[in-house]
Length: 377
Ligand SMILES: *Cc1c(COP(=O)(O)O)cnc(C)c1O
Image 1: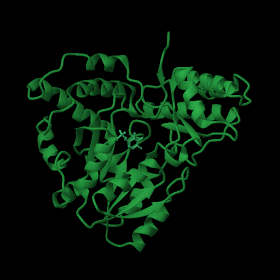
Image 2: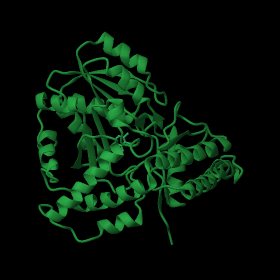
Image 3: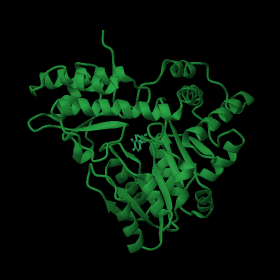
Image 4: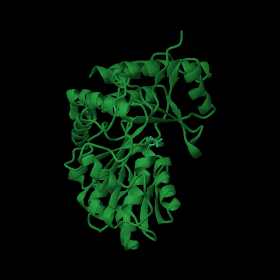
């Protein structure tokens, strides 16, 4: 018998109530029944995004909403500022480059936090920036950026602020309207406790006005077309009906817990994971860690890929290794979405076994005790 567990930063585990809702017979989407469901999830998403604006629901992975944000915010020839501190910041740059935009990068060393003053300085040096693209929780390095401070800097200029909140929404406080973020994007398979397949985009009034002027080519991700349909509780194209049915239940679970409690739970689980890693003699990678995922440096002499493989193949636990140039240098343990204290403790216990099996000097239980000390508080 093998039992598998997802402790990776997406996809994450899905609650049984949500799985059950998605297993129900598929309904037709051009029906009053679907419209009632859609109206409810649209309201729930406004609560989650802390916004009065529409939150568009797209059938795509998170990258689809990112591409949508670019094509609805920009026009050919636009100059954009991209905060590049990891794989997902680099993805913003790649999408912008694919559409021929002029990308001005703000290079942030991996593991370091974006400096809002450096963003302000870049905006001063480069007048006429159309949009700034940032990553709130940089999943690839485990860093949480200070979007509130970055938004305050960008707000002093005419540039739009576009933020990837894929692993921060439902993890830490993301007051979209209060911070003045113009486009906030998220996806289903991280903290929202759904399988992959839905992406979300929330636009400010300024961003909607910009979308009306934006001239990059777009079709599937034309947010104006989508907004018209979604205002009538419909979608422009066939929605991922079963995922929307699951989303209703996932949002109900989140609302029953409450935003403050959700944020506190993620912080507590991540603090326990960090304490365990430190107690095992490991070093954390992120300067300002996101509660979504804990990035741990692979110690000298240990094969980082082997940690991930052994955890998966022998212990049935999926964590994540490093991406791109971080491959083999870090591994990442998530405590994201449908995760509790026992997921953390199980993950730490299995990590201790794995490290011991790979010949790294650990005393079994040191990590667990440190995690339990945090969780007991
Ligand atoms: C997972 C993730 C995405 C979305 O990636 P997809 O594979 O397209 O869903 C985007 N940004 C961040 C920070 C992520 O963690």
